[in-house]
Length: 196
Image (cartoon, rainbow, N blue to C red; front, side, top):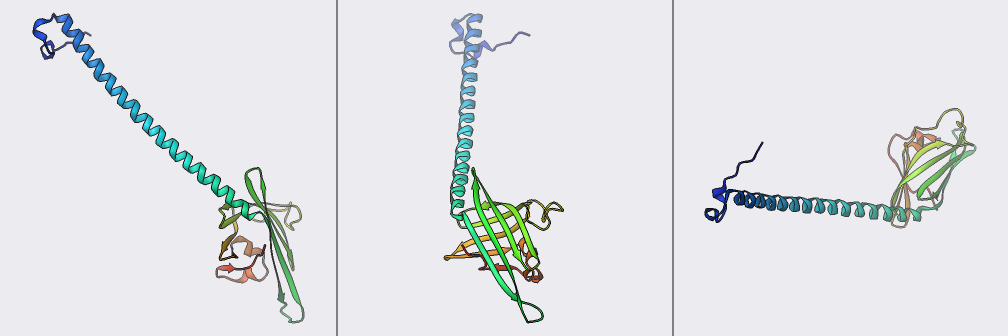
């Protein structure tokens, strides 16, 4: 199919042959197309650099948070003695949370020991330098349920630790189910329990 040109639209068309007019008309269209392509390339480059900038911001924040998690490395303990129902002797429970790093990932080993309590779990950590969430990963050897059933579903939130005003606050979630006294409390369990 051949194109038709309006040769009378071209400047100076009165002195030109029809083939010259078609040539000038096609050059004019090529210049318009080239300008459109250049604008499209500029838009694509701008979008690319915006996406690249957002990715750099995201990774910088992620690296900053990971470095902040290094402040949590160590062992946290909580123990308490409770009076027995008969009032004669007390019973003791204790918990240890050991936070460590493997490569660039942060983990915690949670151990519970004491009256009707023998737990040992592996967990992973999310958070920053001021607050962390500890999520269940798997039941470990040494737990009374090991080899029988997982103590919790994977990714269950166990406990949250928060540094505030020089104190370590904790909010108990699934971990409360292990505690012989706190498990009976229906309200929110938060306060200063663990020490470093």
